[in-house]
Structures are given as structure tokens and as C-alpha cells.
Length: 326
Image (cartoon, rainbow, N blue to C red; front, side, top):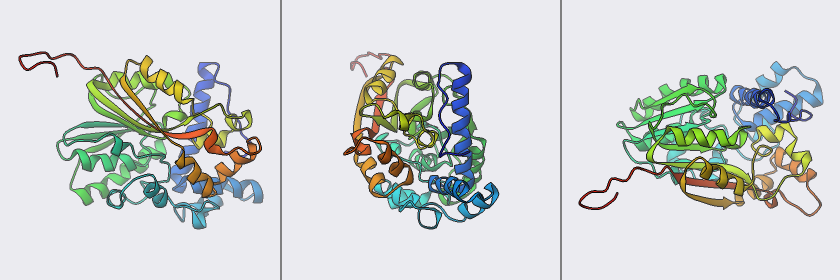
């Protein structure tokens, strides 16, 4: 995949929507193979500048886990996770390679997970948030991770043995599937989490409908994602690297609220965190350097893009009794 020149197909038909999913799936398959988003960027840069074979690029990129020797980015996945609110204890709990630097928030924290809950992670990747959630819900709880990329599912499943060895828990599983068509039963989940994934879907309203379908009455949503404060310039919104990097597919904050409400969710709260975008810009992330070059003079990425925490719940049936309604 040449992320420097490819552009996104216009989503005007079912075939075009599936083509976008295919482009995203290809990009995340490479991330799974190389170990980080930074490594994928270096892989693409090396291939286009030196004409080296993809196998050689993959070999050199997979030798490390982002930042430093993996390319011009100046942060590692662990540094990114720490900066956005994960504790050292949470990071240490996860298997090596589960964190690939793909987060833009900490949904397991804003979800306030409790022992015994059933948690569903949309776009689970290597299982980073699933393993953290598994420790929080404990032996009586369960975590299901769904991802549409076979390479990610394989990576996550390989990580289960290490997780179980560290925690003595066997409460995490991974399922291959699209977040627009979740392989999960109706009203079977207490909490839906997702970390920088919904922006990748070409049919976000369908994703929100699926979230509402699988939640139990009274169940809740905790999503960290990228959203737009105002529309991006076309040079950015049409760029495939920006799509895989979670920027080009983002929608306006107001659209996110409207989509969640249209799915029947209530108590919707949105918290904007533009400091994440400023950090990525200051860290000289290659994608954000590219975005800066495409913006009007005097503008910065956080004028357009923000990290957004979204919480909501599915209305529950009234259970009025002698002590009132719950």
C-alpha cells in the first residue's frame, strides 16, 4: 500500500464502502505485522524513497516497536499510552506487543468498569484495552474484542496466553468481524468501549445502531475517538494515510452526538481533548507534519481535530416497586 499517494474512494455505494474497509484492513494488517503505527509510516516512506522491497522494509520495521529506530516519530507506544492516561500498572499488565501506539484516549478508565461486567471492545487490535478491561471485570466478568483484520485477531489471540499467565484469568476472547455487523447477540453486553476506531468506519451510523443493539437495557458506552471541530481541507480528508491514521474518516463533534442519539442512546456526554493533537504535533509525528503542510498558513491540527471522550447509555426498562424506580 502506498500511503503517500493513495486516496480514499468516494463512499457513494455499497461497493465503495467496502473498498474503504479494504483499504483500512490492508493498512492495519501491516500495522499488525510491523508492530506499530510508526513502523508502518517508516515502511511506506522507505519503500517510496529507496525502492526497497516490502519484505525488507517489513523486516527492519518489525525489529522495534515505534519511535526511535522505527522512524522519525519521537515517541514509543508506551510513552503515548502514559501521556493519555494509562497507568504504569495497566501498561505492565498487557502482553508485549499488545500496545501498538493506536490509542487516542483511555476508554477503560472513563467506563468505570466493575467486576462481573461483560465488556465489548470495538476494533480490539492486539488486545491492549481488552486485557486492561479483563483485569478490571475479574473472573466473574468477560471481555469480547472484535476486529475486522485477521492479522490483528491472530495477534490478539496469541497474546491471551501471556495475559492469562500474568493475571490467572481466562476471561478475554477475540472475534473476527466488522463493527458495522457485530458478531454479538442482542442485549448481551454491559459496556461497549472503543479506542480510536469508529472514525475508521465508512458507515458510522450503522456502528452506533449496532452498539445500541448489543447493549443491555441500562448498559453504557465509553468511546475515545478523534472528531472534527470544523471540516478538514480536502487535501487531508482525501488522503489514505490520514484515513488509516484516524484523521480523514473523523466526523464533526456535533455529528457524533447526533449519530449516538439517533441510535436511541441517552445521557450523551462529549469531552473534547485537543491537547492530544497538540502532543502528536509537538512529537513530530509524520502524519501530523503532513497535515500541517496541507493546512492554511497560521493553522494547526488542533484547530480542526480533537480527541473526544464519548459516554452514553441505553435507556433501561422502568422497574418501579415499593422503593421507587431504579
